[in-house]
Length: 192
Image (tube, rainbow, N blue to C red; front, side, top):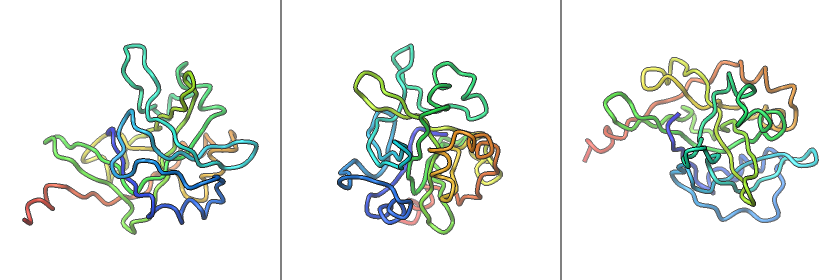
């Protein structure tokens, strides 16, 4: 997965509220294109409830870089990710995500219906900072012409199971990803 995704707060609030997510006050977090090192909305679990909070994208790496993605197929065997995968899973609301194609042109992917997607992730505390990373999987045929990986996308009905039920993780990781609609930015620019 590329290192950006998109959401707008007003467009996703009803989708998040429909999941029975708890929050004291609707967060005033950045919206638009979210990249590594930026705060974003995150749905996580606490005491058997889904809680909306904000977290920063990327686990700190050994070389001072950020680990923004983790392969879902190997997340349990990687020391940097395994404990989070077992007990600290999250979902990240997104309208779309971005990939760069082989010609270095930006391609945006979203549901053909425009529905909100929920990207599967894991979280951890680093010092006093809450941070997350996005899980990726092998790209399906709607994304593979552009990139070999894509985010692991949760069905809306599986967000709570993903976060709160460790036994559900394996079946969700192995599931087929939804077909997405690609949108090339240069096509829009060429109209003007």
